[in-house]
Length: 214
Image (cartoon, rainbow, N blue to C red; front, side):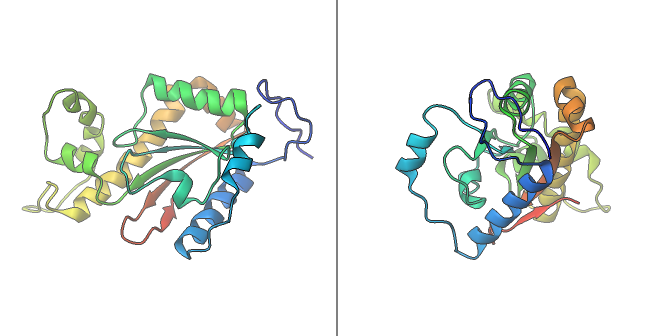
């Protein structure tokens, strides 16, 4: 049996043992409950009390700031269940990598999920080459995904082409996963040792369904 991770923030030998495979299944089951409107009835104040002295989130989710994609809600998770990192366009930088290292290496989260979504405003901005203050340099981080998606001659490569936008969003998730692996020796080692999994997925803003990448 797998030995529970030593957690410097929680001294509790009775912590449940969760594997990367278990963690992914928990997210899939949570989204299924959400889509079918069968979310768990939680006593949130009780969860506040239970997590007051420490935390053991089983997953770290990197998602967009889009108001339609709140990770805890769409995966039907409670207080203390997941780390949630949100930034427009769900990309990584050094600070986000550090946050994910904290989540997985120090706290013991078993999976990193990079969650993109359909009709992403940040992706649309990158496709349209929007320039506005600090947004300009932020959207530049999504441009590699824009460049990677091929289109037919004469086909629009702007936000008017929602199929193109969603394809770019998917590619952006894949590139973000690669950037996590190559940008963090800590996370890459955990992944190589099968101590964590790093998975991509897309959330459909019209249906609430999360499609996980194979």
